[in-house]
Length: 448
Image 1: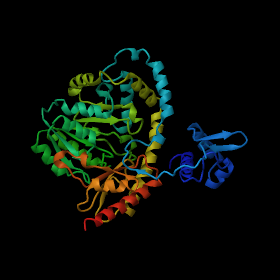
Image 2: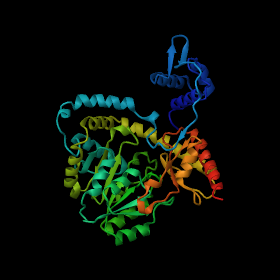
Image 3: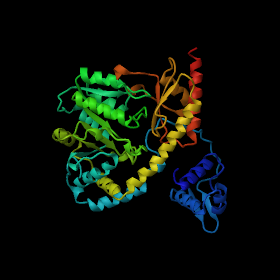
């Protein structure tokens, strides 16, 4: 479970939304609210204090707490359940902690900000990242770690770099996220797709592709895949690495959400070949602040020179200030504490989502990633199109993502929607999924 005071804040927010608590009116006293919700007085005090910091409530000495705002009548807003926004939960982002780190970084790195820095990142940050990655079973020296402007920058540069195996084609899971599809198609690269289902990929087919095609690298999101939410087992990861070794194929392992994996015995593919066959990339966007655009890549020595040139050509170097703040945030232990909290939160969301799927989705549909607190997909029955369902649900104030453009053109399917529950309150997830299930049944009638 998350912190109890956060649950109290959610309860107050819920009462504000349904107008049980009204602007300008007094909130329940600390003592009576603690009794009603069966928690300690200190928990209520903490919740009220946080809401006061957020300027949602204010205190009047000897009178209590009041809800900010006018009590003038207002138009009731419809309840919109947004499964299409895929960023992290805004209410759980560590703005104040990171602001503190930014201020410290300004003091610490003020000299460096007046001159150009190393293309591959601050040496001190790369050392810190080398230590940090050990928690994920990624053991890499600082010299092989490159700091990038979001892991997407690393992926985009690697797509067009020549690789030591001198091969041309890219193998990629289908579907995969928009930005990687754009990196491939905008450069006119040759690509081979491999279908990602609720059971993962067909490893026999992957072997056939590696054997018969000139595959430069296989791009894979090894945990909480976007959009399916699928995570490979350790056995699958080991087998994929063995195939790559056998047929001289590189792997780009995008482990952008590895920190959120609650399976502590789950290893990244990098663990099975740390020599450089597996290029490991990681982002801090989904677990920290997306606007920071910070990520890393662990590169083989054979690629370092060309990657450094390409990185320098792209942006000279990632901004020193954000690098310095990340270093302080990691070394202080704040990041570890933040991740621990997020893991619990997203695991809970995944549990709620899977239960809702099992209860509300009609026969003929299938889903992937039901246990992921971030991404999942629903495959629609019969001839139903994702675009039609997305439009139909929009009228019911439920937003979902049509996943059609998450496929390479030659592999395109138009019957899959993506959901992200990262920004949806737990209590709203079953309501939204029930509306999706009803929407699928309603649309199915038009195909009869």
